[in-house]
Length: 103
Image (cartoon, rainbow, N blue to C red; front, side):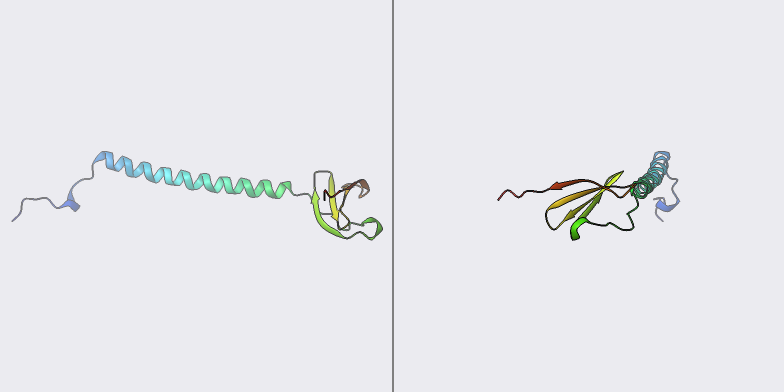
């Protein structure tokens, strides 16, 4: 008969138990932190969006090619290389910017 002890019956060293607990706690903290960051990104994205206007009437039959918006304005880029900036509250045209090509 052999005098070597069975490895499964040996007590676990205290420092190994502490290390196992530390890794488990840190894993939980990392998962909670990641979920918190993702939740904050989703919340800030939803609150940052301003509602789109129902109807945008473009002057002179202009055709829109792009749209962007700010906090109190929205802008439409037309096929005729103009940027039309509208007031969000009233829907009135604030400014027209002509884009010149450098050919």
